[in-house]
Image (cartoon, rainbow, N blue to C red; front, top):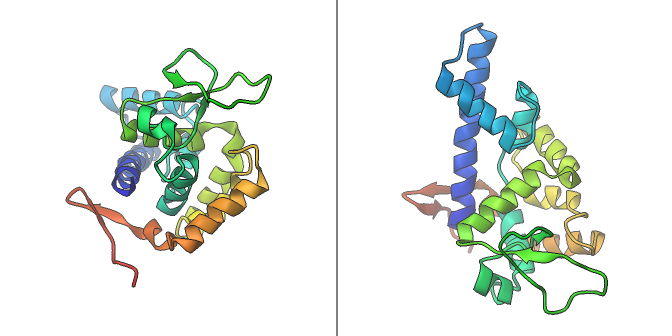
Length: 207
């Protein structure tokens, strides 16, 4: 899963750099060409940001700490054993209420109508998870704290940001405690500095 997370993050960072470059050019009163304007319009729409709100776009267009993504994928997929991940590539247990591709939970509380969103590939699941954290109103505090880390020049810390995911699960604070425990016990925090190298994670082993 790690290379998939890093690939999505690097795609996001590349887009983020492009936004910064375009923003700089606009502040120099340089006109953008049609391709750049069309691309920006698509990014504003994708991230649910008002057209022209560059600050809002940059606050949403950012990475998900690998430690956090790995811990959540482990918890939500039963460490890769759940039916949802084996049959539907659903690593993060994302709910869906529409008629999109989905799987129905075998055990669902009375009155519940949610399904688990299914995906064609694992990387589609990772991309949807990142988009969820980057756009859903439930994770506004997550994005605010991440932006504050950026502004202070600090690493994007998955252990810290996990505290802003109480609304990811009905378990609330208990869920956050579990995610932080997975990060700690499995020493995942050092992976927040991992980068892809020739398509593989470029990390030092933990001894």
